[in-house]
Length: 389
Image (cartoon, rainbow, N blue to C red; front, side, top):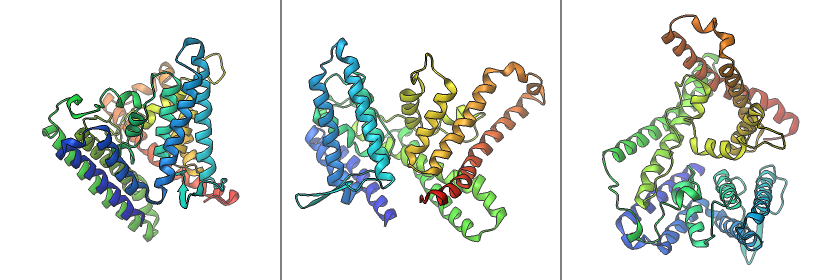
């Protein structure tokens, strides 16, 4: 059923791109909103009323804060404090819902079941991004229609992410304001074909992974660990995101890239500079440069916080928390090595430069694959002890 729902969602998103391309009359706020609500109703189904309620509540909170903290220098910190409080509350709600600590995630009112989408991590990220940019003063004036068009933008419902400050300069309120671009050119076709190929191969690798898992042989698990599992995850996600990038240009919006051939990179830093980049950029910008009450930024502590956030963004579960921390530890080790290269001068002279490069790429790939394995092995006993699923 989930697979069928995902297929319907993808069809609805593609249809929204085609409609805007073929019917110029829809290129205005009312047309955009009508299409976006239609797509959202397909994507969220039973949660659509809760989804809309969430969007309105977030904007209402920001509007109240805007009213009591005009954009003046002396009130900037106060607005930022309120925005931070809102972000903390949002994360707490999603955490409580994911851990089944809340009984009021589903609200029956006016004869309608308003189910808050507490497991929608993309909505969580869009909400935090909006509150962050509002609190930091990047959004000078709130407008509900423009906000609603951004937060319900069809091509970000399933990923990737575009911030309000990136969206607004491109968004035209009517067709005459939108820049004229040649959408379907050779570059666009290459990206579309790449997206289709990635999604097709990714789907095939998912089936292969399931088939190999059912066989239960140890040597086949190595193929899953280092071959089918990581590549199925990467190709499926990258293909979907590349498709969203292709479709978004029909609405005259250029989405930031999310995947740029991360496997085969020479170190963990290069890997994460190319893996799910819109998520990593947000966590880096919002968390890494924070002093957390210390006199100066602690790079290693902040890296662990960033990667823990990246992990738990996928799902609030032991596996993803451990997965994020292991990646963070690996990144810290690499950073320590990079900052003290002179201590490893003798090691860096072993073999040729080409051989060292190939070895570093192999080590990086093995580490990325092993993180998934160790995260599962560590999470299983913890889940048993805590009763988590």
